[in-house]
Image 1 (cartoon, rainbow, N blue to C red):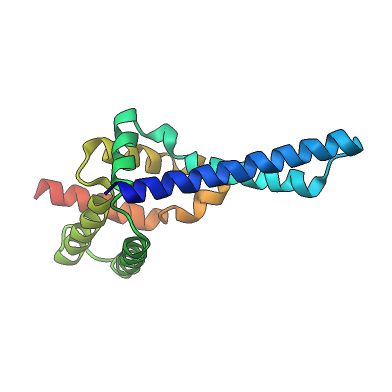
Image 2 (cartoon, rainbow, N blue to C red; image 1 turned 45 degrees about the horizontal axis):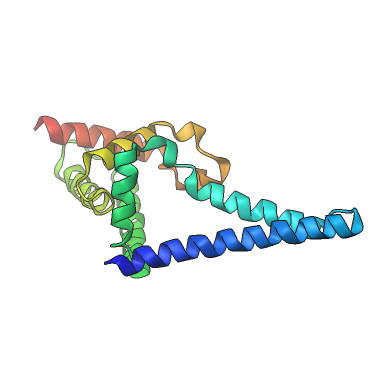
Length: 170
């Protein structure tokens, strides 16, 4: 169970080591030539940007939720990621096809069940993680530009909000 955690941290350390090496190389070039190596500067900016991209969601989650997400990362694998991505894509396609359905109807409620199952795979039933997700998705207009590709289309989101509310009142 600790092996995946070890791998994630080793990958992060490797990325930080590469970034530190690039910074040191850029400083050495600047010290020697009194001129910046723009290739190295660009590489540093890219590496730091990549690290910032992975941390942009942190502000939405409590410390407890962050700890639980880190625990759950140990359960994640590339195969699981592939399966879950496929299931989300299939679900979004099916929701799109059902936008004219009654949100309280059987079709919509089947979609709600699938939605909850997939969210549950991420949250593990943690109310704190769910709270962070809710806050994050409520703030979609303020997401970094490079993350907007992961936003849920407004009509799909609106339909699912109605369908979920309908399932809670029935």
